[in-house]
Length: 233
Image (cartoon, rainbow, N blue to C red; front, side, top):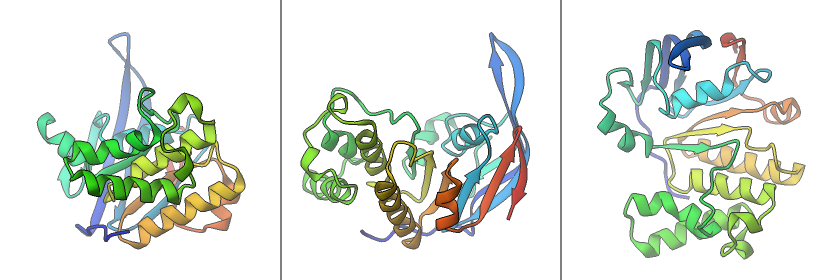
């Protein structure tokens, strides 16, 4: 894999960030409250906590799918509260996201799902083919490149989603329960890929319930409970 570009000292910085979703047009309960932490460029963080703790909401913030209700969120050194809506697509192209529910396009093959971010970036087709095939081989799906999502198992769809997230060598890589549909062998293979991306300079944040996986791959932890940060060790 090629080098991942390094950037600023802090890849991510949150200062007293809160997030409140609207319910039927009215403010709902706080999903996140008073979060303050930073992740340096090239850092690795486990994002831990029980269901409902706010892990997915925090990843949505970092992926720029939503903006903070209050506080300041900086990504790549830019204050996202002040970023223009038209600038967000270019910023998000530097962020890879592994969704818990895969979000593969059903009418596209495994290859075309993985190649999609590269085609959006308008890379040459020969480079797209080489990079997409490299990622599909890495996740063990080289023989299923022409299969559509409905023809794949849950674990295979998860691996396609992972390959799609990393194929563009993102500067910031976010993963929401990426091993939830994988067996132990594939989970370890995924961790090798995430660690390799991190070694090459990507900042990596992985949300998981798998405490055994965390124990096998020690790293700094952000632990949430009831939308608050209870540990940053």
